[in-house]
Length: 199
Image (cartoon, rainbow, N blue to C red; front, side, top):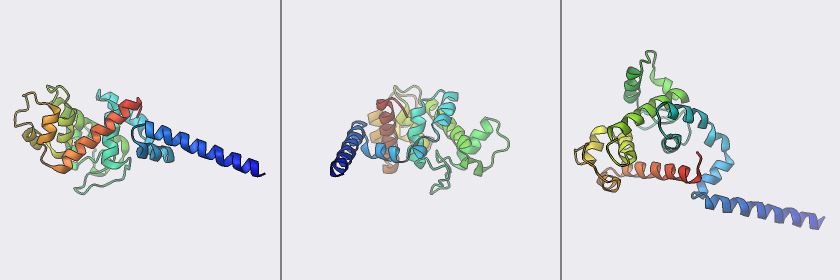
């Protein structure tokens, strides 16, 4: 009986060590551990994200990184300025999306629906990426616009949206610490997903 108990304990330690090593090798052990503990929460919107991202020709890993940063996958989240849902879409941005895409029945509370929220947020991010498509890598520029608005992003680009600017210089120009942190954290999460090859 003692031998069996020792064997079970040893197997438990070996399995825990194996999971620990895998988590550390993932590049973000804490995120990976949470993902293992709550896979339904971390992956419940993956198929929807892939579908909506595909409609806008965007990388679903980028959209998931934004969702992670904005709401930690909580479709019922309400932000401090009234932003709603997975991608924390503002009512103003959602009304622009509804007008441009001819969604005549839109109501602000529709943003708590994951599909509507992802459609509006992805449309808005896609539009921001188009604003900056002349840059070598428009991701940081578009994320800054998504978070703080187009006029601020243009200011951080030295008020010349057409002039090439390195992402590093642009990120240094962001004088809102919360936006700089936002851009950095979304890009880090996006790179994490890309490194491991899946969302």
